[in-house]
Image (tube, rainbow, N blue to C red; front, top):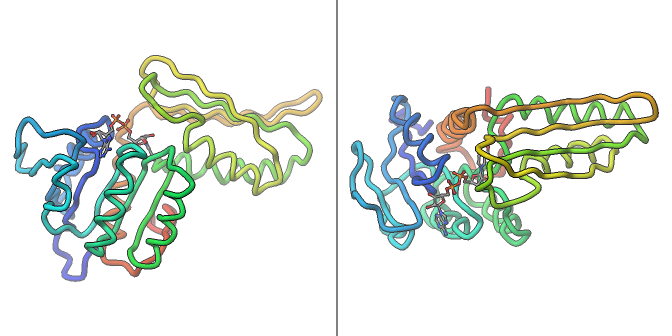
Length: 240
Ligand code: NAD
């Protein structure tokens, strides 16, 4: 939270999307933050909804002062919100997946000037799953490691950012993960990690049934991140 312990002023980027809508709904239930701007790709039908000012991306530079932005948009929209946070010296929490290598590099560079957190997944369960996967991989040298992820049909990137993060954990433990992606119906997000050798198999599974878990994690992280020193923070740094 900021120094005066006033509510953290939040900008939500990607406000009209599935995650944006969950963020706006859950933000309205908290008294440690206030949403001062909601930004979507296109011109909003209504300027002010439930006391929150809505903006189109083209109007981003005219957004009011804010302490932290939460970004759940698409890679096409990411550069603009990173630039705005950098310019305003505001914190950035981003869960946008499918970023290009140059965008990841820009994130790393901006961490020298503003506090920021990018996470492929804001659920506590997946944070624990990452630790389990790394431990299993380290304990099972030579076993096959397969990661299968399932999401709703509208998801653009594959493998999911979470699958790639789980793969990175597996690699930390010395495994060489392979990926499979399924796109079906309205699945919120499922990640299945399997370690197999001759005659035996370990299966680790995480199912998200409601995207509110991601929104809650991101709101919590934004309140914790606002006003901190510049740097690239991890979700686990901000959970306590
Ligand atoms: P969505 O398609 O429902 O919403 C996308 C939002 O981004 C919309 O508000 C749209 O107006 C906005 N947008 C699109 N192009 C834009 C642009 N060029 N500039 C600014 N805004 C733009 O998507 P969603 O399901 O809400 O997911 C959003 C992102 O969050 C995806 O990358 C998804 O993979 C990711 N996600 C991450 C987590 C996590 O825990 N890290 C969880 C769920 C989703």
